[in-house]
Structure formats: structure tokens, C-alpha cells
Length: 265
Image 1 (cartoon, one colour):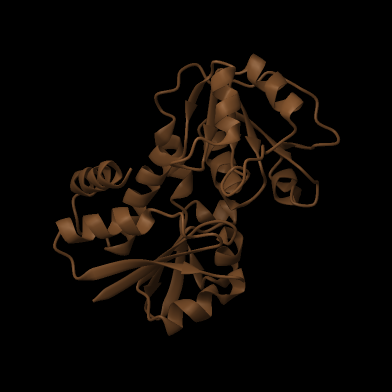
Image 2 (tube, helix red, strand yellow; image 1 turned 90 degrees about the vertical axis):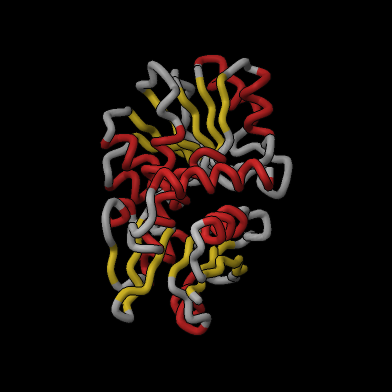
């Protein structure tokens, strides 16, 4: 039997095991997908080997740590510096990032977007920002403090901390922070967020299956909103293909994962 897991902290909220296991069962694969809580991202490599895993997904806050511990990095993960999917190949850990294309697929139905503001500066923000800019969008980054903005500065993004941010017009505001995941807090100051939403059209929170304070504020401002469910679906389909070496039909994988969302939502 092949074994897969998702590493994170927190990780009990993750529905990745539900959607992957439903798809595994539907396709008749001899495999199992679990959750693994970690206190330290540098333990990923050791844990991967001791658990005898075939593959793993990585969630907050360990995507940058996962990048550092991989023996080989493939695709856009090289540009991002963050990994959310790992497989074992020839006794080496190979890292990928499916967050970036997964997020892009999730917002394809949004129209007339040019300027985007990303809240947060972690691995998810890295993935989304680089990929969206490659697709032709103008992307700015806003984080509470400056110390995590070095990656984005090197990539020539416009970056701001709370201390030096001035309100501009953005078509889409994206929350990539964990604010609202386990507590009812906003990713930035309420008055700043309200001013941003007055000028925006869309708001997306990468947190899924929860109406976060961020999305509540966006709804009150009459913006079109999405949580992270579609992103989770699309990145999971791509990760599943990596786990099983593209041996299964992508349409079937997506169908079974959508079934799982309906079953467990």
C-alpha cells in the first residue's frame, strides 16, 4: 500500500485526506492519505522517511521549509521558493508547487482584473504572486512587517508593510494569511480593509469551508467573493497526478474530488 500525508500546523481542519481518499477508493488504488501535525518544518524530511511515505502535501506554515529540505525542485516551485507537494523518486525527495496553477484556475471566471493586492508574505503568497505576474497581472504585496518581504523585493514586486501602505485601487484582494482560520481576526486593520474593499471588485480568502472575517467584510462591501475551496480542488487534482505519475484520467480525478467536496461539505 502506498502512503501519503499532509504536513501542517494546524492540520486538523484539512479535508485533503477526505478528498484524496475518496478519489483513491473510487479509482481502486491501494493507498491511504493521512494528516500529520508538525511543530517544526525542518522535521519534514525525517518524518517523510520514518513514515515510509510515497508522497506528501505541505500546508501552512511549512511550504518554505519544504522547499529547503527537498533534494530536487521541479517546475514553478524553483521560482517561488515554496513547495506544497513532495514525492519520493529514486530515494530522493522531489518538490513541486500546485498552489500557483490551482489558484489561477480558481479565479478564471473573474472578469476585468488588472491590479491585485496579496495580503501576507508566506509560501502561498509567493506561489500566487509569481504565477499571476507571469500571467500578466500587476501584483502588489502587503504584509504586517517588512522582514518577510525580501523575497518579493528581489523579484521586483511593489511591497508594503502596515507602516508604509497607502490605499490604492485594486480589482482583487487576496488573503493568504492564516487570520480567520482558528480565530475571528482580520489579516489587516479593519479601516484599511474597508477602504480597500470600497475600490475593489473581488475578494478571495485561501482559507476554505469557513466564512472568515475577511470574507464577511467583503460581502458587506458587496464584492464578489470566493473562499479557498476551488483552489484546494484544482491544486489537489494536480498533486494527485504527481503522486500517481499521471496514470489516471484528469477528468476522473476532478469528478471524484468534486464528489468528495459535496459529501463532506
